[in-house]
Length: 146
Image 1 (cartoon, one colour):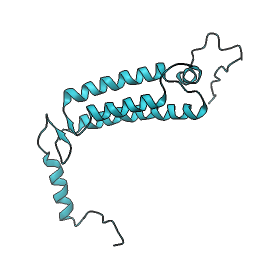
Image 2 (spheres, rainbow, N blue to C red; image 1 turned 90 degrees about the vertical axis):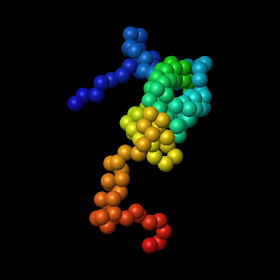
Image 3 (cartoon, rainbow, N blue to C red; image 1 turned 180 degrees about the vertical axis):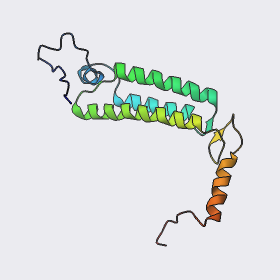
Image 4 (cartoon, one colour; image 1 turned 90 degrees about the horizontal axis):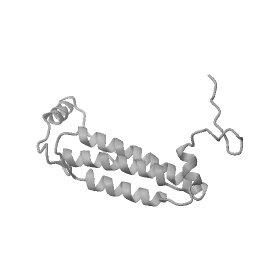
């Protein structure tokens, strides 16, 4: 398997080449910092996927997260390698935020501190799993020395 060579700066090949989003983050002089994107992501997850949820709010949160991702790729900047690494971490957190929304939308029940307004009841499936574990003698793991 051959590796595809990417054009490097100053090599003369970069005239018609498409710039990667990571190069754009490093070369940008004005834009959003990683801290701003991180705060926006945290606020989005808190507002749209918090302890009280329903389908319309989760859909709106997914849309907002996609807009935030597009804005981050278009405006994020890094002044040095240290900030660039934080930018990569925030972009990874945006991916994880998308996974959180997918998992939250899939969970169609209300349990303990997490309320789903469009599914106010618990599913019977969880109760069946717990009772079958008790019949088999499986107990919860204990913390501590015993």
